[in-house]
Image (cartoon, rainbow, N blue to C red; front, side):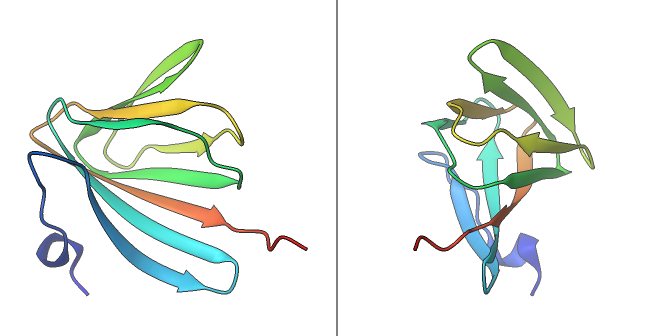
Length: 102
């Protein structure tokens, strides 16, 4: 699969592509155009973000972090956060370890 061919950036909302799902691990690619925001949300699972292309502003309530291509960031569990695309085209890979609920 070629991510650039499978994921089409959209001016009205962030683009999403499920890259891989195996057992308890999910990988999702999110595409953001400049100024586009992935709305505030939380993740109940450990997650690692990797910037594949462009740069983003990762915002937590008390902290902002600018990440550029090939930077990684460990997303805090259960903390409200949002992401804004800073370059013309921005691609991020999020890998989550989804623990089954018993």
